[in-house]
Image 1 (cartoon, helix red, strand yellow):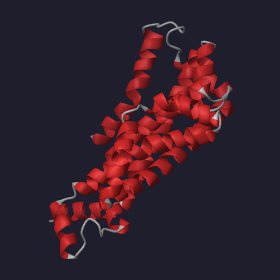
Image 2 (cartoon, rainbow, N blue to C red):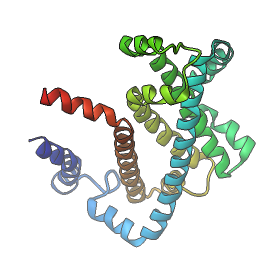
Image 3 (tube, rainbow, N blue to C red):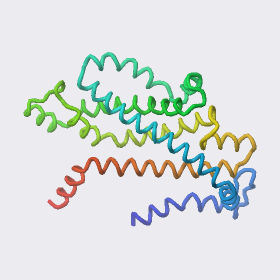
Image 4 (cartoon, rainbow, N blue to C red):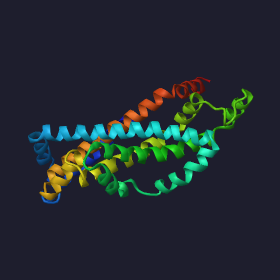
Amino acid sequence: MSRLTKILGFILMPLLWIILSYFLKVPENYLPSPLSVIKEFYELKSLFLYHFSLTAIRLAAGMAGGIFIGILIGYLMFKYEQFDNLFQPFAQSIRAIPPVATIPFFLLWFGFSDKGKVLMLIVAVSVNLAFSGYQILYDMPEKYRISLLNLGINRRDMSIKIAIPLILEKILPTLRFALVISIASIITIEMIGSQSGLGYLIQTARTTFNLSGIFVCVFLLAILSYIYDTLTIVIIKKLVYWERRLDYEEVRF
């Protein structure tokens, strides 16, 4: 039943699109038909796939760097109170600023280079993950806290080998949210200050009023988002392997 529901979820939007285009006769100027979008992609598929790959690489680099730095900072904030007091006011001020609002600064500093785009994603992702990681460690279950104290390990003595598994257990929702923010940010900066990527193609198609081209980019973004979101879930579940073992033992019991 769940598999059928998932299949229906995939075909619901295309089905609605077909109904609007071919049965309700919505004009092409407002909603391009599926055939025109497929034709647009087929005629320029090498161009679309090239820019798709550039956006995917930038997104992967920014997410990977942001996750690594964010988890490390969250651990240091929890372990060292002085670092927490020093870093938190600065990070809170950055956290309150939407990533897209910082785009002019990164364009001014780095121009159209990929360094600025990736660095913007790293900052946006790492700040949120740092606070999330810190809060996860601060609110760790009582059973873990007691076990560590019995082993003579307090907050100051906690090693990163202990902290990372605790963070990974609870970090998945924040990672998925960070992915959404990152996709929105990379597309926006590609639209404003880039000559490559899906955002650039969307901006180019907008200026020529090429709705079919915009729809192709939107579908490619949906595919990219689904792939990265699925990979995030799979990787976290692989890393947090003991959670699967606990679930199995509870069912068996």
